[in-house]
Length: 102
Image (tube, rainbow, N blue to C red; front, side, top):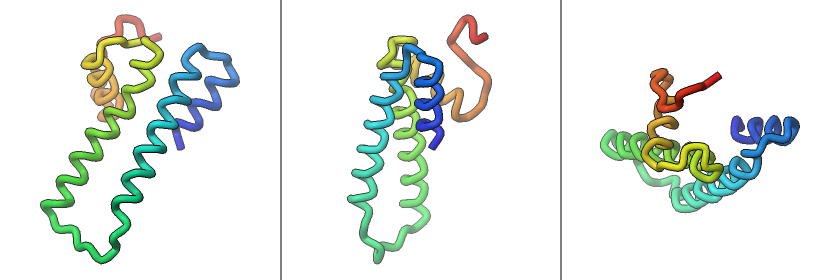
């Protein structure tokens, strides 16, 4: 939902990163749709071990999808810096590699 709101505001204000968010949203919906399709077995019981794995992989995939706009728009061209910035934003640590965030 938030990615769609970002795309809407970027389009209104004619930001140059509009296309990178659209591409990221398409990739996010495709990956999400894939995971929905492969997890359609309602009879499967999820135990604590599988639950921990699901949560850990969800954070990893969310971070990978979240860093796509940075990489596609080349605002942060280094993959590891983009991942750091994304995880920092998701966890609200306040750490940033950006010099000027005004």
